[in-house]
Amino acid sequence: MDISTLFNRKLVIGVAIASLAAAGAYYGFSPRSKPLNQRFITVPVTRGSLTQTVAANGTLNPVVLVNVGSRVSGVVQTIYADFNDKVKKGQVLLRLNPSLLQAQLNQSRANAANARASLDLARANEKRSQELYDKRYVSRQSLDTAIQAMRSAEAQLDQAEAQVRSDAINLNYTVIRSPVAGVVVSREVDAGQTVAASFQTPTLFKIAQDLTHMQIDSSFAEADIGGIRVGQNARFTVDAYPGRTFTGRVRQIRLDPTTESNVVTYNVVIDVDNSKGDLLPGMTAYVNVTTAELKDVVSVPNAALRFRPAKDMFIQKQASDRSRPKGEGMHGAVYILGDTGLIPVPLLLGASDGNRTQVLAGDIRSGEMVVTDVASNNAPSGRSARVRIH
Image (cartoon, rainbow, N blue to C red; front, side, top):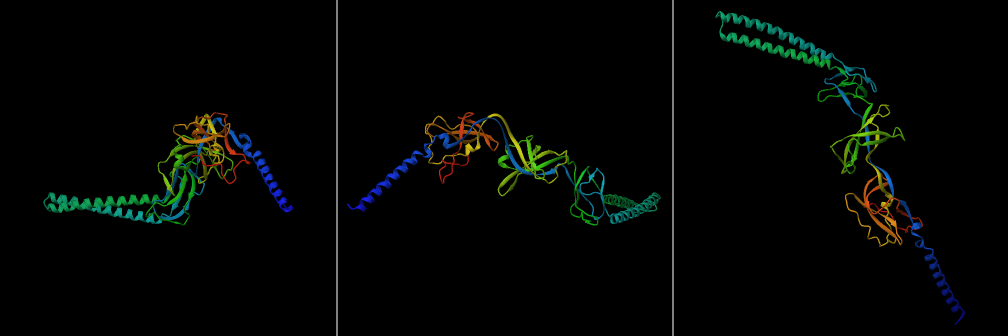
């Protein structure tokens, strides 16, 4: 055997010995050799209070918003109220130019005077015809004709007087008055503008009756509407006051759903106290309605409910005593540390505040540690250890 062959054999044997040593070192110091409590992150099950809320966006509006319009057409002559003005009931807000309607009223009055004169003549003719008929100087037909002419003149006078009253009312409509006491939140016209009321009543002003009490018109998804009830407390924020929280109360759940992009929402009306006047109409409100306030309940972290071990993590088989609980509610599971691996614990779940979820039933106790994640140096590469609750 030559020297080169002997050298190659020794090199191969050396590499094999080094490989075996490296493998022994890997398995000797493998993360799997660590205790379970060092390989997983755990959090205790707790007992205490839990508040469940549902969230939606909405718009602040006055409780009563009155649209003030005009029943007659005309040109805006004078405006007496502007944005943000406080007005009283019956206060004059605007005047239309009355010239045309005044002329129509004058014409109607003249027509009524003419009809009144015609009636006087018809009555005199009827009286003379009656006297002549009594003396047999005229026929019954002549008397009937005089009576018919008198009654026709009476009807024409009634019609003319009705037209006078109608034109007088229309003339009064050129003075626009506030129907309620409140604050002008919108003025839709300017002086000199023509108001046309031919087909529909145009809006001239919008008056909020009372801005110290407002409401939020919010849109809640159908998945959340089942937990909302009249009288529940609500909290909301607005962009105008960062970091400040306002309160309200659910007044109404309107039974008129809206569907957009196959998403069904319901309008939930929330009463708001605005006695300080900080909130303004049209502000966007980010609402949270409290649907459940629970005390002294067992709850688990949502992170524990989302955790699922990867396929190559050992699950302890001796867990037959932890059966799936029965009842109405959402089913889920958490994992606890056993002697030789993880033990799944099926649970029946209730309300959630977004961080913790109520346990309705299941073999879990307050203070027991549940797994929420894998320690960073034990997470399998390329695999996720988290999935959604099912």
